[in-house]
Image 1 (cartoon, helix red, strand yellow):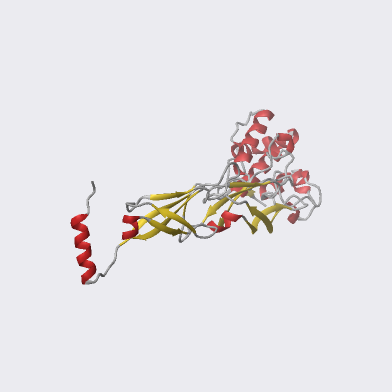
Image 2: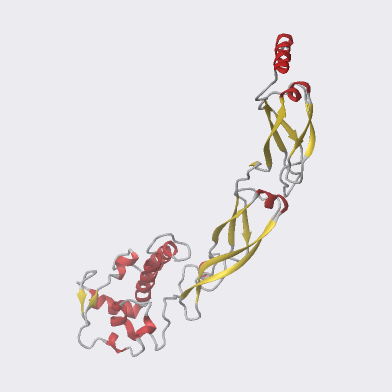
Length: 315
């Protein structure tokens, strides 16, 4: 049976006379780049398996020597057959047990794998194994919450779809439920670290889940950091003479004084009526003034407004 020749040196990006140290460094660098848990490349999983297969052969002196003897003069993608007496065909396990390897590997190096070999590639030199001094991979996600929820704090149960290792070294898609507490005062963009709640690393360790809070727009309030902004209307005579006005806040309306002569667009500051903070006092609320103008006036009212216009002065 003919199979397509794989140039393992080309896969790892090293020369044929590369040292074992150079081969190991090349594998580690590329395996980090294409690890399925971290890479955004569309073909990351296939590339990761291909890299592992190449390293499985080239890291072993005997396997590399056999590969070099046969591979001399062959090119990637070329159809090849094992030479007479090639021992690589002697492997007697179920072909499904080597599903993580290519036809080329199974044909030429199948005798290196014992019967019942794991289905997926799971190499000892994994770039995230403890011996590589790497932290478990971090997983990132977002959670949408309302403004009133972050004012008092809330709790969410998230369904995370992720890949986890199987006991045989492969991977499976699973759904996990993660309960997260959104603290009071979390603002848009706040990142919460849930230790040990992320996905599994290649050696089974669990990383952290970094959850970004996204505060959804509110129909009444605008959020800037820990400060809130709201629009309030006052009648024109109250703007001129001064009055008291009701201002909505997240914990109920409050009454505040409107000073005489306030102008449209000016704002009143209500200290401590914004979002709470982890340290220090809460943010403030700013009430932006809009002046309500009567749409219809009686004849008598029109006469009075004309008199006011004649007597009014900005001096």
